[in-house]
Image (cartoon, each protein chain N blue to C red):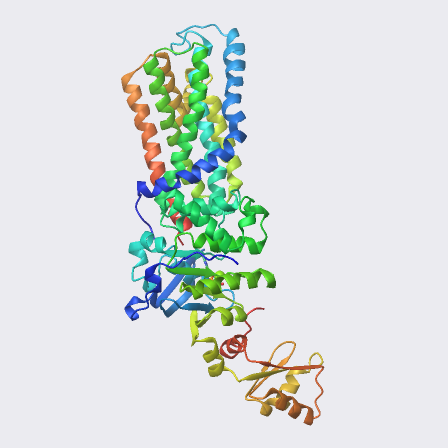
Length: 329
Length: 263
Ligand SMILES: Nc1ncnc2c1ncn2[C@@H]1O[C@H](COP(=O)(O)OP(=O)(O)O)[C@@H](O)[C@H]1O
Ligand SMILES: [Mg+2]
């Protein structure tokens, strides 16, 4: 059994009115000047995250997720719009906000020359925590992310999954009210991802407000109570994973694969068999409530796909419906 | 995002820099502590044995050893800074992204810059202390007070190099120009700014050039104090010159690192 430290401060556990929102953004924009041209990374988004919630930004690379997260983390100035974190304005109270949040950035910023324990200890000191307290907390967190055996190892020698867990442990050193995780499991193998998910799930159960970005629909479905789908700097849909699927997709999806180059032509022949048909480079997706029934009808028409399967709709289908593109290419 | 310098916050980085020092001091001990001694022996004692100790030609020093020793202290303060600022600062910006981790906490860029510069000055302080202690054993010093003030001057020289060099590094895209900074900046100053010979030996235009380098101001100030031939107006000029570099560089370092990290 792993003992779990208590990362929650009373403020995080207190569920209150809308004015108590952990994050409030309206008309939030971010643009970068790069080589004479302006890149609009975030083009006016409205977001409200409530205490205790697990909130996600789901979107492909370049959607503007990291730009949004860095503004929320009070390390990147807002270009336009309003942003309040824990009721404070990051332009005015950056240090106060940063004192109460935990950040797991997309790119690790661990000190690769320090050992695992020192990474936590040194980071805790940046928050002004007393030495004895940081030492104790570092040990608790090492246990929480299952790195106790690696406490004296150099960061360079850790696997990708271990580094990510250490970054998560580091982001909890100040008992944050709000935890920001930018692509917490990107680049990890499936097993390592499940370990991270398990830890995040525990934090969620303890009432920590989680905000995460991901381009994995399964991650969003596993962890998020509520999410926004982001594309090209805009929010294109918002809701719980289940409600998004109900709203934008059918219950089931039938995937059909035909010989190379036939997909387009066959799509026209099966159009009326489903609510919607999507043509991907390598397969057709038929959206309907009952997939087996759809397959039967396809066979009735004398069509013989090389491969066919029926599955439940996912957020990937929602994204495809909303943007015409897949999340991970 | 930009915040003001807060010394209490900056002090929270003490443990970090202590760990860095514990990890690196051995690796730099030879270049910091042993090489200067070899210079003193080779240049001051052995080469200096061939040079006639004429105070009128050696800015008041009675031997070449007494002339070159304070020059080398100042030059060593400079080279220590070049090693501590260029690659380490670029590494914390670009390769290890350490600064990004720091400013994700309540620390701000001004706090981070202050703490790093303080560490560099601390490094200069340790190197200069060892160097000057050894030189004392060669019996080349004038008054005790002069030597103590000359020691504090090393900290000023350290900051006068560290702060502008930090600003330059924060503005550089990558490390490719460091080779130029060393070859066209540090090494010519080391050789020609009066550490090893009086700059009056240079042709007038080169002498004028040598006298606008920060190292000459540091060398001349250190030598006057160590030898005990103090010219008040020159001391003022040197101190003002080095202080302007230190303060201007410090301001520039903070603004440029802000521009680099806060996007
Ligand atoms: N510092 C920056 N300078 C210039 N452009 C940037 C910067 N950061 C992000 N961008 C651009 O903004 C857009 C959104 O990027 P990002 O927020 O990183 O998206 P995501 O995290 O969803 O992949 C991209 O086009 C990216 O190239
Ligand atoms: Mg990103």
